Length: 219
Image (spheres, rainbow, N blue to C red):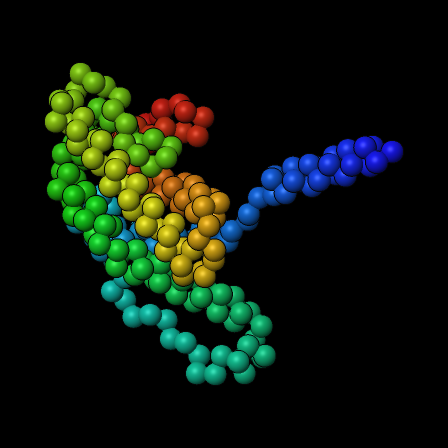
């Protein structure tokens, strides 16, 4: 009888351990703020970057005026809460951009990307390389590239990974979330997906872009 009880308790213990093992950590990811922060970083640090089609002009216009008494106006005009939310999102994206731009390794990555940009743009224009669904650069036609170009593509991808990693760390810091390995991995994946979306938006017509299904299409 004692043996059966012990085996039963062991089975319950194993079941509890298995249940704990599959628990996942859900972290907050400010997708809109991250997307805007990536744009701000490119505007600030990536010189002569291709203009995003349909993008608004550089933000040299005065910021919208904030109501003098937002609390009292919020009572009389509930819709102002939506404006407050927009201001909060803008503040979050600005904070992310500043945090990432303050990282020495990110500044170094952008300096290196600036030096590669003319040749990289030419490779995109010729169709020799394309943009992967991870926001990285992939060689599509080896006959159009040299060994130096291959090294350039490899270095470019490394720089892009540095920027994405910096964004992931900044998000965890700004939003005051745990920087556990599980949280880092989850935020890193979402930061990479948002980075890829930004790069697709900024791609010029005629450039090759890889869809989520792995197929290549011209923009």
